[in-house]
Image 1 (cartoon, rainbow over the protein chains, first blue to last red):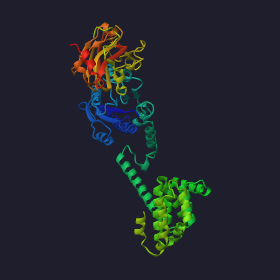
Image 2: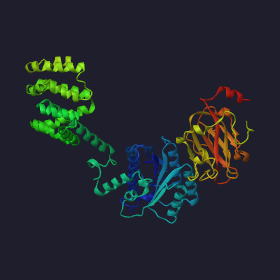
Image 3: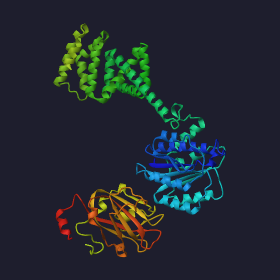
Length: 406
Length: 176
């Protein structure tokens, strides 16, 4: 998880036209670059990566260090092959680009792809290496393609001069059937120093092997991050919508009330008293809460199929228990509103009868923590409850009264 | 004030090591085994076995931010005779300098250390240039013997903080 700014130096010289890596050296290099960019940005979202080309007409910076993966990937298109590799200039320009990075707290790193022969002598390379070390820039070299005499040794010297605490690495990739990117994935260039991109590397390896099976939605978030993000967001939205719909259905189920024991069992659950009945209710609630989504969905389905009984108790449990998880007064208010809705319908007479029972209500209130039944306001409420229950069953004018009572 | 015995500090100046913001301290071109803490931190700097060493070449760039604004009066730099620093340039309030632009800016003060200084005699700075210092950059350009490696045993910064400066004391010191 090291905070890093990386400059990737691409070799687009004539030597990379060769096809000893499939499909061509240049293509293999481009894939490797894509993977590295993804790995870096994944290991730490504040990491920045920049790209420059070293051959062609001259050293050219394609994109300065940025954390925008799309920009980096898009600039890899339309690159032309040609010219000769200018390693020293490339590294110096990379160093300059890193020096002017926006976040000075980032560590500096240069990754060089060297596919063509190196025409510089060791001394020049050593001088460059020393400058890198002095400015605490780490260097990674990917040695592929041409292997003329002296190239591996020159690059080794360069790495040894720059190396400070094993932060610089060199990887030699011989030509063969394995893709350049696959070979790189197991190297410390990908995995960083210690942990870091190894998780990503494993996922990428799985993807490469199983054809993108490792990623959600079958879309590689590194190849197409926006699509993956859009899919993920829409999935979450759908889930949230379903949850909201299920909750609504649950509340409606609570309205279609129940006998006194159902009410009492739900009250027991909310109070979490050490009763055997409440224990089972609590377990029930816990079970329901863990399978929250699926349970709610099932209940919604059952509701639509007009099967209230089986779902009511559980739903009442979750509904009430959710309420009191937050706030005792809120629970009380919810109870009140439930009672209101209860009184609206003719089938709710049983509930109101239960509530009419003064002793029953006061016993419940006694066990509610934070509610003092001797409190004047509570007493008023109780009295109003009683006064309401009778006319409500005949009239529909409970609402204004209720609001006045509250 | 400059003729004071080596270890003693000028009156009312304090050792600013307490005001160093350690999270932002940086040193370019230091060797990993001999790092800046050996020269700067209390306890380490008095241990003669521990010193700060340069790595790839003899130059060192040390960046020290402070937790509050300070006035810098003098510095004490101790080092061995041959590898101790010679030309030292100090920059006040310059963030994130590199070796490439170290010579582009005019230093707030530039001192040439004598072997006397390397034994612990404080070097007085141009006090007027260091009146409100939030961060200090020390650029060690070369060393006494012209070696490839510079070694420093101790760096002590003497000065006062702006907030707790006692005005009465200041009047007594200023003898210009």
